[in-house]
Structures are given as structure tokens and as C-alpha cells.
Image (cartoon, rainbow, N blue to C red; front, top):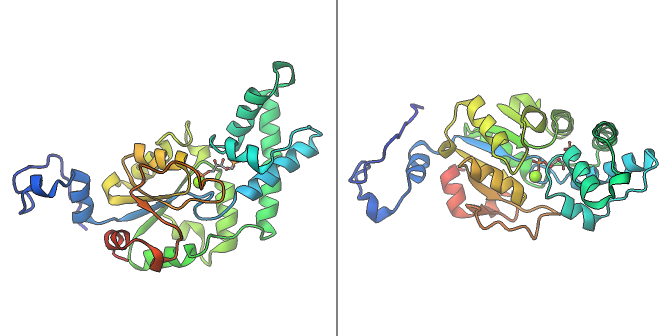
Length: 266
Ligand code: XBP
Ligand code: MG
């Protein structure tokens, strides 16, 4: 499709209507004219409920290193405000431990490496599945010529293994680009992971729609000027989603808001 580049919106009647009356913003016009071409999915909590598997993997790593750390669901919910497993350990290290007991950066790398091994084991044993409706939604979107991408603070290995075990096709054949925490300096809520998708796929924010489960993910997508649909997950039910453009309670298409199905033309 020819790419519509709207660099300056004439407020008179560029689109045959009085812009003032419709009070549409440039990006609304653009996404109406060009349509949403790319759906960008967050991974943990959005494509799949993974955080219990992550939490258990963290605790197994702490235990195997004979550390007296244990992250219950209450503390893990707080720690999920920090994206990135290494960053999460660092945050806990600095916030909850006296200086004398704090771990070195090298220790943190080692513990996170072991945590990832335990997490990948649990994924390969089938303990993590895609959220209900996701595989049908992805199939329907692909059938309707939507491009798909992923934007996640986790690592590529974590994404690939789970998708390989849950999807019929190779993840690289389903998603045009997979933006992962190991590719950027700053993880969510920084917009870098989403901006990397836009740059790699040569897309404008208005041509995309993001799907997120958490506040830090919502903020990340909005800072990249991408409209965002939020579907909270197990740990993010009480997050503040004021800036969300759409609010979902499931990924079953028939339960999507009509306005969302319209702009997705699904
Ligand atoms: C979720 C995260 C990740 C996972 C843990 O990412 O913040 O850090 O919790 O995975 P998103 P790692 O919601 O953006 O998919 O230990 O590999 O970071
Ligand atoms: Mg998430």
C-alpha cells in the first residue's frame, strides 16, 4: 500500500471535512487512512502468563545458590515494576539488603543465568501456554495481512522457546521482528523496544497498535506514540491504565470493543 506521509495537516479541508469539527488528531487521520498495518505484542503477561514461571525460576536460582532470598507473590508484584530479570535482582539487592550483604554485578549475572535455565526448563516441560485466544488472534491478523511484531524486556531465548512450543509455525515466520531486552540499552518503560520495531520495520507509530499487560509496558508504547490496547495479567490487575486507548478483558476477538475491531478491520 502506498505510504501516506502526512507531514503537515491542513486544518481546512484536506480530507473533505472541517477538521476543527471532527477534532481528529493527525495520528487518528493517518491510522484511519492507512489503517493499522502492524500489531506489536508485549510478551510476558500479554502473549502468555509467564510471571509465575519466572518467579519460581528466580526462587530456584536463589535456593541453588544457598541464598536466603525468597520472592513470594506479594513482593514479586512490587518487583515487577522493574523490567528485566537482572535489573529486578539489582533493585531488590539495593532496596532491601544492607550494603554488607549486597551482591556484585558478576554474582547477579550468574544468578540470572541460572534463573533463565530454570525458566527455560519449565517452558520446555509445558508449564507455560499462550493466553486464551492469542493463537487464533494471531492467525486471523496474519490472514488479514497484518504484520506482527514483539516488543519485550525479556531475552530472545525466552521468547523463541515458548513460541516454538506453542505455535504451529516458526516464530520468525509469524513475527516480522522480535525486539528483545538484549537488543536495547533501556528496557520498559523506556520507549526503546518499541522504537526499535518501528525503525526495523520502517513503520510510523500511527500505522501500529500495541498490546500490553502492564503499566510500564503501556508507558513504553505510549512514549513511542503508539496507540495501545491493554489486557491486564495476573500481577498487573491493579496497575493504572489511564493512558490506554483500548481496554480488553480477553483476547477472544468476539469480546473486543467494536471500535477496536473496526480499526483492526478484523
Ligand atoms: C517482562 C519482564 C521480564 C520478565 C523476566 O517483560 O520484565 O524481565 O519478567 O524475564 P515484558 P528476564 O512484559 O516486556 O515481556 O528474567 O529474561 O528479564
Ligand atoms: Mg508484559
